[in-house]
Figure 1 (cartoon, rainbow, N blue to C red):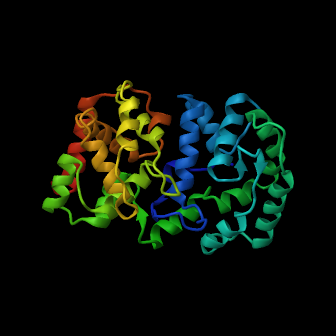
Figure 2 (cartoon, rainbow, N blue to C red; figure 1 turned 90 degrees about the vertical axis):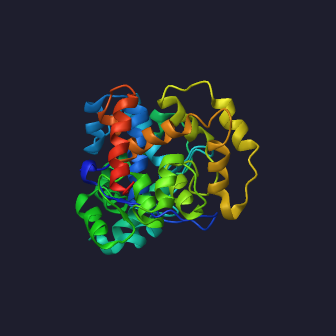
Length: 313
């Protein structure tokens, strides 16, 4: 249920818009899920996180909640109905099967095993892991093959897919490379002000930051989380107000929300430090797993200067 060699895991960051039919998870999405669940449940305990990286799940509270978090994130467990879901496992496998030697028969057995778990009477972390644990133990290798738990699989994707986000590349620079010419006035203005009319870029960025979820819905909690990380904890209501009063068109959703945040009188002075720190952290999804240092605005600015230079600005 976890992954090996996460530090070398590559990221494919193709984010499509709209409420379309279900789409297989990319390596970027699974990596984000794994690391965010580690961040939330290991809470600075690197030794424990390393156990999860080694696919070791013990029956303790933190490990159980990590496991449940990943299952929910990969849509293998629906918390509201307390039901295990294997509906899309084969579809997930088929999307990337050319990158793995995994046979489909094994995937179907894994799917059947997940489906057979059915509904449980409680979504308690320990109850979820107790139920899923035997399936995890039996199909660990299949899970790693299907949900990008092997470096050799992700390396192949990294080397062959033009949409691959490079190792140690920030989400901001990835989206910028796809939508602007380095050194262009438009890009440099964006990096100085946070404002652009390029909706393709902002859609890529908002999805990459999880400000928009997989279905294209705004996620206020993720924005507030980023404010909290720069020690701004009294603006939650301002975020809600800015988003709730934002006039949004489907075709320009990301641009509209971005404008509403950056131009709000209660938020305009903090959005740049929010974005700067998130850019630094997006360079490695393991940032908070390995880095326990408090927010340091001077260090963040030094890092951002390097990103600006890389952008030709």
